[in-house]
Image 1 (cartoon, rainbow, N blue to C red):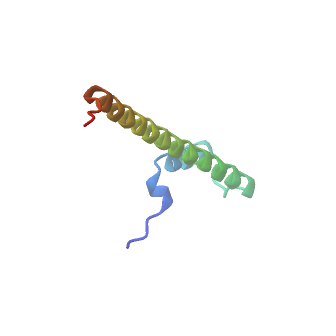
Image 2: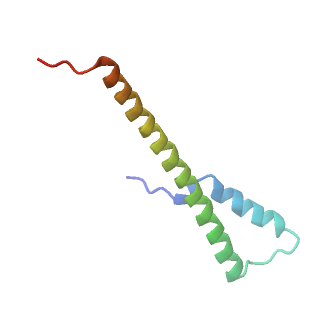
Length: 81
């Protein structure tokens, strides 16, 4: 299986890096460890927010499916012998 970088899976990480590069274009120097750590934390927060949104959407879809199944069962009724 081909290795996939986590940065390719989440579109928010390149945007954060691009924002950092745009703000630091006037002084072309390497970022400090504190800046890199802050950038990593911001990327993790953004990734976690995206994952939470996906989980929320999935749970809402599951709840709707269960609700539809329960209403169909109620409409049909239970027939006893």
